[in-house]
Amino acid sequence: MNIQTPKQTLVVLFIAISLAAISLLTAACSRAPSDREAVDLALPSLRAFVPDIEKDDISILKSYQKDADTIVVLKAGGMICEMPLIESKNGWIGRGINCSGQFESPEKAEARRKKKVIAEITASIEETNRKSPFVSDRNMRHDKSEFDPETLTVRSYFTDHGSKQTAMSQKLLETVKETAMAENCNHLRYMMRNGVTVEHYVKDDDGNPVMQYIINNDVCNRYYR
Image (tube, rainbow, N blue to C red; front, side, top):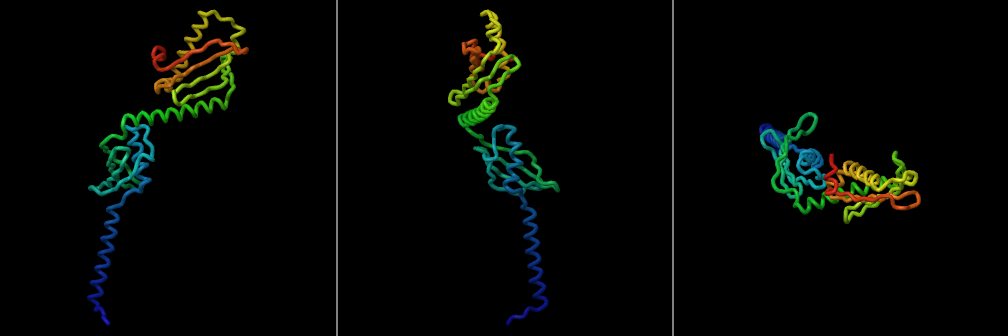
């Protein structure tokens, strides 16, 4: 049986304390945010140059220490980025982000943009149809709207309650049409800028056509204020 001397016991204790101190020091020096925290910190900086980026597009690869900073290395689409962080008593603070590479190809960027536009317009049309039919302050009733995501075309159908009581000359009708086109071009500018075509069909109370027009970005260029 081996019996340690007091001196040997002190040596063993010293080694154990040293190892614990090294372990604690290493842990302190290698602290890093969780992947979720790192993604939340990176997202605002990445959106400065990739506005449509989402959290699911970002993955954390690793982290390392450099001077007083914790450097988080992440992948966003086709880009590799480094994000320096410092830890404060209130949590982690980002110190900018540096990226190399391209987030996505022009083709993928266009597909992403179109997908976003389709989702936004679909939601807007559904909300409008839930409220329909409704009458505007111009005695114009919105009956329904349709959206074709393949051609990015919105078709809206209206009933003009006042058209029968107010017989309009062709010249006056054209003036009213021009005014409506100008107003809708400016009101729907986001749609126009994203390649959407809008068709409006107006009938009277008996179902007779009163007016129809089609607007897109090319048409609206002369109306933008």
